[in-house]
Image (cartoon, rainbow, N blue to C red):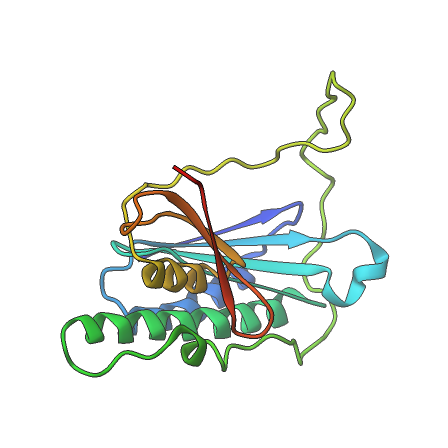
Length: 205
């Protein structure tokens, strides 16, 4: 399993890379077919957000669904701990689902499976990585609009059930998930509402 650690506006020291590799080596117990783990570090320069100025995003690429987790804290070590805790829970849930499909035990609802996910940070500390100057340049728009598109993603349109879409949404830790509904044949979006309720939007034919 390859582990790629990179910083966005931060310099990543070797000792932190070693710490990440040691911590993430534990996730292989859930799936021996893991391909790569991408770890990206972000630094928030706004002094008003000093308590959550360091963000860590972890993305696990497998032969199955992508599993993702992120967290923010006062330092990158605490953020990594929290992100890893979320990732560990999602990988365990994915492994349990594979066992369900092999008929080993009864499935658990999405609400029950996500009830114990960590949401708050409890650790803090001094920042340990140094920020570097902003590398990206803002693009001036001819239409004068204040917004801009900063990322584009394209996903496979393999049809799936609503339940599968909810499961995929929980694995990546997003509040919504775009998918091709196997039953209706229409592009649809499942999204998180208050508590453990979900909604679904579909395009009319």
